Image 1 (spheres, rainbow, N blue to C red):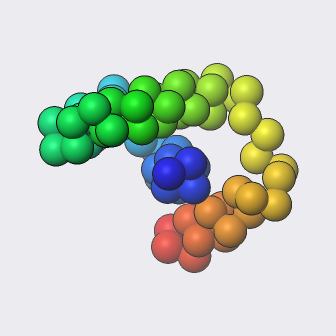
Image 2 (tube, rainbow, N blue to C red):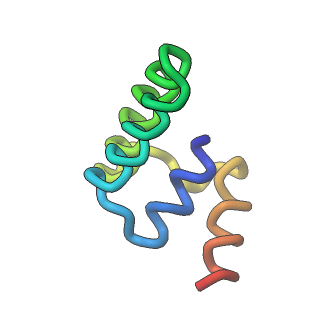
Length: 70
């Protein structure tokens, strides 16, 4: 899920928008969705605050994809 959150960040998604989507995940997936949503919101908060190292090769495909779509 982190890769999709990186792409969302590249396209300018706000933390409120990500939380809204995660609320939908929680509603449709129940308890399993709550865990994933909590992790996603925590990760996205760190991403917005610049605490995530975007130089790792794991995120490079996300950045490349976002650049191609823009």
